[in-house]
Length: 161
Image 1 (tube, one colour):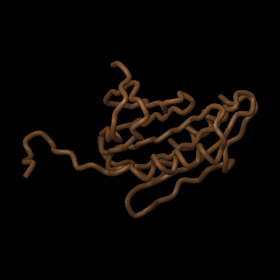
Image 2 (cartoon, helix red, strand yellow):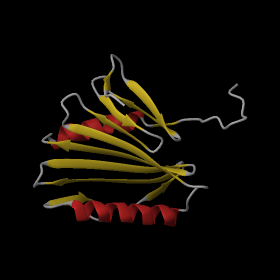
Image 3 (cartoon, helix red, strand yellow):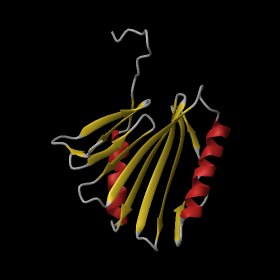
Image 4 (cartoon, helix red, strand yellow):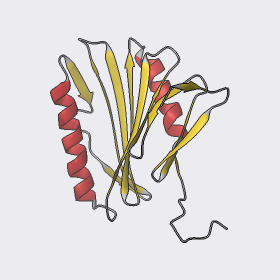
């Protein structure tokens, strides 16, 4: 798929989620499992991915998945950190959630991750920035998360009315 730039913000659905990217961003790739979008400068990259299960997972299963994800993140760092050091998932009224952020001084990369359980899926919003001030990275991440919505999907045989 060729990257495309849009004159207006573009909303992209993936699984049970819908996210909107700024108009200056380009969608680099999209599949059933993920979306990769880049800022116009190319110094920020957002990856939105889903993991689907046959049924909603338990909080313990979600916690284990989050622990494994954070440990993998830490292993890949050369001279970096994850904050908080041991992020703890929480059980919100509309699904389980995890947030963490971090950076790698050796590459000047900062990142933020947000995982949320939506029905039988876990959606991850992951933003990495290279050489971007932390405040700007945080603003972009908050802006992306503010557009994250649940979407009602029609199952085969269901009416859309």
